[in-house]
Amino acid sequence: MPHHETRPVVLRPDERLVPATLALAAEAAREAATDLPGAAIELAGKWGDRLPLPGHGSTPLLWEWLASVAAADLSVARAAEPHLDALAILAESGAAPPPAGSSWGVYAAEGPGVRVAATPDHDSWVLEGTKPWCSLGGVVSHALVTAWVDDTRRGLFAVDLRHPGVQALDNAWHARGLRDIGSGPLRLAGVPATAVGDPGWYLRRDGFAWGGMGVAAVWYGGAVGVARRLVRQARERTPDQVAHLHLGVVDSALTVARLTLLDAAQRIDGGEAAGDAGALLALRVRNVVADSVERVLGAADHALGPGPLALEPEHAARVADLRLYVRQHHAERDSVALGQQLLATCPPDGAPW
Image 1 (cartoon, one colour):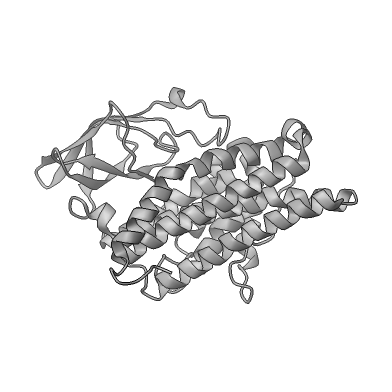
Image 2: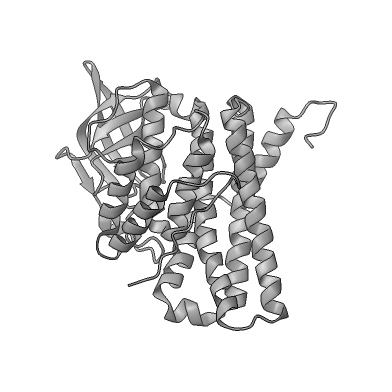
């Protein structure tokens, strides 16, 4: 059975996650060998009503949970995070609580040549078209889906994915990382849907930025999981000067990411991450954490060599999962967006730092 680290990934040195959280994370990681989606969805369901919503005073605790689960098994966290995000979106919208026992995805990506259109139908809507990048679309029971209400505006809609008009195209997923978190397209044909907010609300709301930073907390936890393999090597054989160098690089990278996430979580809870300020903060946090993740991955490759990547299934999976997941960050394009947002919000007679 693979070895899963279950120590907490702590943003605040003075507080730790409750032990039951880590026990559930370990349980889900063990079950992942046979039923990863089911284990992850069960984990999210158990904790969905217990974890704090972002922006309600305990955002660091929410992100610590996500990072701790990701450090144990990134695929589990990758499956659980959208469910928690959907609960936060529904709460932010003022919608009715989701059905008991339901599991949720959030599908807002667009792709070339595919499109989902929303057509009014009395007091509700009907969705038609193909939605790309639908993680576990054939597994979760419900989803929040963006769809075009006209040529220029998109709305957000709650959909029951058990409707016969929903077809998951799982054969489109060929990834080597996150292999069990199939993110192929969904084909929707005459699927009834309920609007969540007005058109454009999904992107305008403050929680859009907060959710993006929550994903960065999962990246950070995944990097911690990879970094712990370096510590294990240092304990198995006497480290030389180069091994010490790599450990120093990893510690610096993880510290920058941790402090950035902690600062952001405190700003969210303090009311300092609304509107443009929240959008700028999200770009900054995701850039910093993505850079830190890539530094950790590079240091791990150099320090460990090909052996663990070739001969240790757990480490190889961790690295492959993390490399794919962090590509949700758009690299140089997101750095460009950060620079543009920085200048747009900077006072004309001052500097941003």
